[in-house]
Length: 300
Image (cartoon, rainbow, N blue to C red; front, top):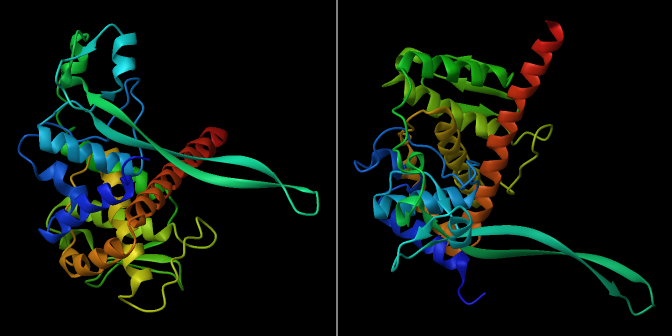
């Protein structure tokens, strides 16, 4: 590719961290984003995932866009609209693999899987003219707090995770495979409780019988530890967007910033990997909702 997209994206995240800011929390803290914060959406309403969520959140923040919809120049044309002259788009990324058959020295053929990534440009609908009015509407305000929290309770309960309450620390214990949480009343707000639970349940997905995620962690504070914490941070942000919750920075996030900076500076692909793992964790937790609904349907 003409430009190193890994370095470009990682450089933006590093710049934020060096200012003490978490890129994935910016959308909720900015005054120009009115109403409900959601994941960025494609022209057909499907949500972007992984690193593209962080990239488009950041682009919307910088430009002050309130609409979550993004699309390519061609998609806008096909739908009877057009990008305004002079508008600059933002990059999103598509990753996949291709299989190539190669002949070996002994005459046999061997298939090789080659990963690739390509970038393409999208525009926010606020950069586009000629749309039906509903594309320009701001996101609906967050739903009633009581309903939202009940919805979160149902979501986390459906995971079937062993969540225990007590003490003054939140953590996931791999040995006993349980999540430990302080009691609900100890948190500053209901949102803080659910955001913390989302973080710990992202850790919960790393167990070998679930997603079997391992970064070679040997001790507290090493590189593997920092990588897993970054996955949990992003996973919690993605889940909060899905559930209409307002995430809050953990009380210990400042302590992690230096270790995250080291990981990102040493490996320009680390944020892409962390976002992919975080998306996989969020998707896994969502899949447990479907399993619960299926069981209830059979029981009924």
